[in-house]
Image (cartoon, rainbow, N blue to C red):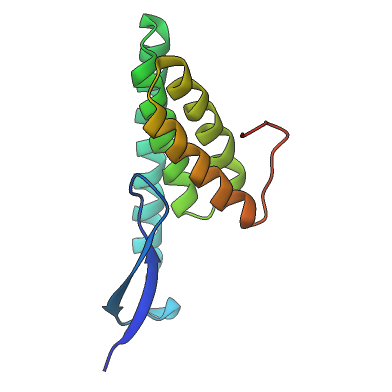
Length: 126
């Protein structure tokens, strides 16, 4: 029988849902799987950083905000809150600049979640 497990999704705002799943024992994750996952994440980071550079060059604040938001969440789901927080704070500032109040509020909610998990930045979030 499976157990209900709470997981967090990368949606537009913090939320959690119950799903039925059987946790996979750590020992069953192979070194190859771990290496493949790490390689995929590294590749994604490189591509997002390339996109960020291009959006910055052409002055596309919407694109910059989207990339920073996405990278922030990529780090957040890996538990890398010290890397996620500044990106989400920058995304929030960009969303404020372009007038997207919904995404700005969403960034603020995620920053609040991250601060409650033990990481705070000198950046003013509110």
